[in-house]
Image 1 (cartoon, rainbow, N blue to C red):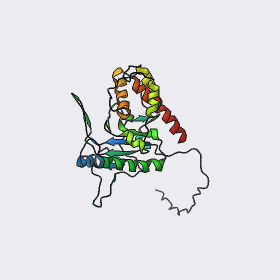
Image 2 (tube, rainbow, N blue to C red):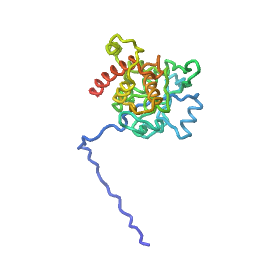
Image 3 (cartoon, rainbow, N blue to C red):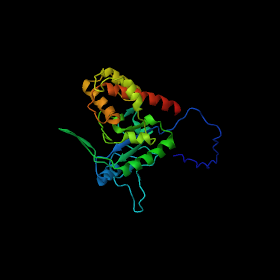
Length: 263
């Protein structure tokens, strides 16, 4: 056997004076989840199994000093396993390009008379907003790329649920929300519950970023619309294609175009 020569270490210099134009941030999405477990269960799931997230926001996120504390479970430079099979705006497998925040919350469950969902206390949401804003600023994440698990994986996920205060977050600079005046304009005095063509709703949803096609089975079409409504019209998320949903989408696409240009 021929012995390999031990190469002497080569001392070298890396120059970073020239920069390529063909580059962007690796992290482009912020995905928000609920755990559907208490703190002990959430920590076990996120630290010992095949599921992980970059951050966990406890239900009572204060340490002994009284400072709100987010638990970082995965460094932002590493990929966490929080999104799973997912799609948003032409990209799939969003684990590769996202930061995931899990929020300790009991979750959402359908019942024979409606649904049961655990609320998010104000102090917990305040920490979600503060952490999210820092992440958004670090990676220049577009408002429309702040999403829920139910947006990017609507076939199988429903978190962070109908009680998550998306509008409050958008007002604080986290995510996107349509202008109510523009929603009213697009309604044009129609009854909000007037039925519209499902194809018109799905076409707008696809433009916004959802993984939907007109050829999907009817049951999936309704499920997809319900996911959109849970985010942007949680007062009624039965998945019915109505005039108000269409108007919200039209107003939302306006804001998206404006924010995307600014970004």
